[in-house]
Length: 362
Image 1: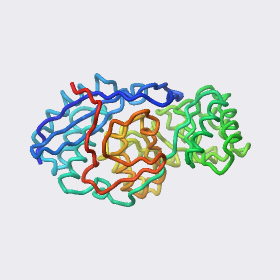
Image 2: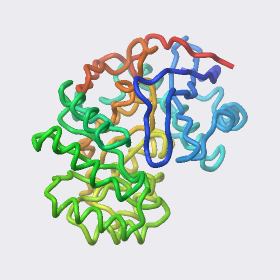
Image 3: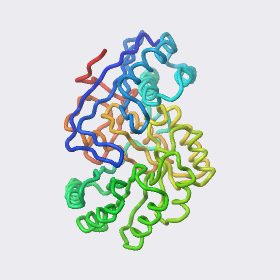
Image 4: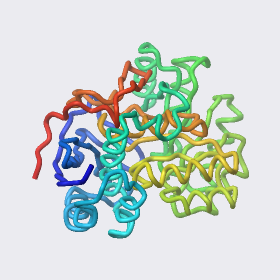
């Protein structure tokens, strides 16, 4: 199965509600789609999230990286030569992980089709179903409490609550949510780099003292502040999850060896795709560090690839794959089956896509 062409397009999907974090506000999902065609007429799909404040990737940079640098390197290569293709993608240019991830996904889609098996089974096949949390955007405490009640009424048992915007109000936000939903629901919080190390320790200790029962805190400090991240992990009981601090396998090794966090959040948009994410999984498993599989506001295209990795590996024990549930529309036919918080994969080859609607190809 030989790669014949790579097309890049743009997709726009409205959100049900604005997505608000300490770093950004999103009202419409606007991402890049990759379509790889082969000499057997098989088609592979991938997605790149436009996240300039997190990864630095924009619409223009993603398009340029794929068409000008990655595409010339892998056109004509055989899909079954997976390692060689991934080596070429990684060497095509530095950084630009979102662009690399989208091509990586499409290649794995084709790889599964070539062997007539779903990707998750080729990667390990640990399970075929996961349960995701849902994100509660940072807002006024009463609004977040209402959103939390709505999520619980839909059956969600774990909420990922955004904090880190106006630290003095974060404790008030968590108290309002706990008062609204009780203690049978798990709460994990995500500060999106919004606190200083000392602020993080102060507020997390207060949450502990107030009995708010926080499952974990995600990226409490700046991504580059590994010493600060370790300071937080060493001084609070709530487990610390490293997110923006971990892009590459080398980043993961640095976090693990320095004991700077208790858990690692893997996102395909940070790792450059499944290939490097698997290396992080191997590192984490070697050291006994559990992982979360997260997302960056991708549609069901990117999230399907993430679900296949999540289902493949036992070291991935937590799942933040709610992107499609935040979208008002789903242009994807096939792929992962979302039944609100329960995500199931079937035995269709590759990633299981049938058709992707509403893509404007360049």
